[in-house]
Image (tube, rainbow, N blue to C red; front, side):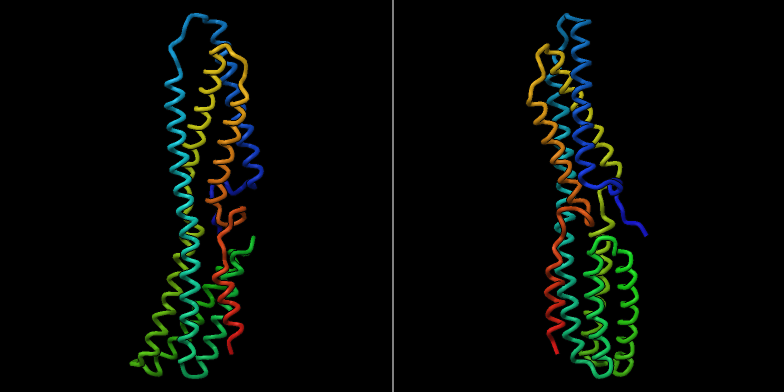
Length: 260
């Protein structure tokens, strides 16, 4: 079971280094081509400043688009964690109104479920946590079915089943929003293609002008690399530096353990 994105094969530091090197090489290639062009064709060439401005504007648009997508998914992951913690807490409280032995068994299963959800946030533990969550779903639903068969018309039983169903639904929502909804490879490809093209034209304009290399080019390379690294980190729900807080589930775990 794989949930990796197109750039997850490399660690963040390697992607950052490769971006700096790739963008820097693109600027250098453009500079050398522009310098060669000026030496071979000293006559005045049509100004390329407008082309450079257009490409940089397109690059800025793509960066804003990808950053907005990644940031929105990051906010979705935080929201679903809070919703899931609230739903599990409500289900746990409503389980206390059920008859024995289902009350004790359901609460024990819900304790294990919270532990499994927190385990999924640990590096390398996602597949195991998802398998355990699916197993607990079936066990919880089997217990809920027994409760419903004892008294099909009970309002308390109906409220419990409703909240348990919400817990299961939020599992699917969290899986889609938090793991499977990633930036497509085509978007990454278009972003890198436009970025490299823009940097080549920047270097070409600099070489065509006949001036020496400007230190500002290094600032441009670093700025673009940092922004791209930030987007990649936001789009990587597991293993990145910017991690979604699990504090809502941690608080719920402590509250459940402290309850009788």
